[in-house]
Length: 155
Image 1 (cartoon, rainbow, N blue to C red):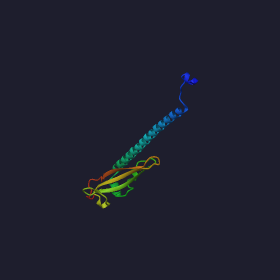
Image 2: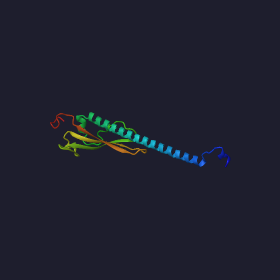
Image 3: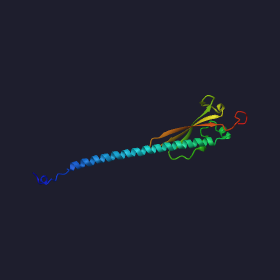
Image 4: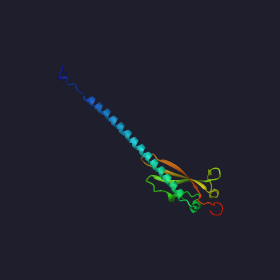
């Protein structure tokens, strides 16, 4: 019987201490990884919400700023509504991707001659980032020609 055993001084060995520190370290790294994933997901959601809000703002400005003169002059020009675009943050880009005309039963691509006074614009917001995955959101805006006498020589 050794002197240490006789006095009841049993303790942890160095190997047991190292293993317990390693297990604690792995647990801390896993928790920090989960927190990082949650922060990234929250940031991506925030960017998507911001892009959708900018699209709605742009669409509302297009509708509010449409007059008879601007409606007629912006027939199918993709850049026609760029002046109503709100200021965009870094990494955001906006485009008018489609102009369709109401033909009496549905919206279809066509020319200015096919315009019956109702158009549908498709506005797209693209977000590119080197840190987060990029995405694109689309918003459709229906425009009515703002005059009351369409086709009767008044418009």
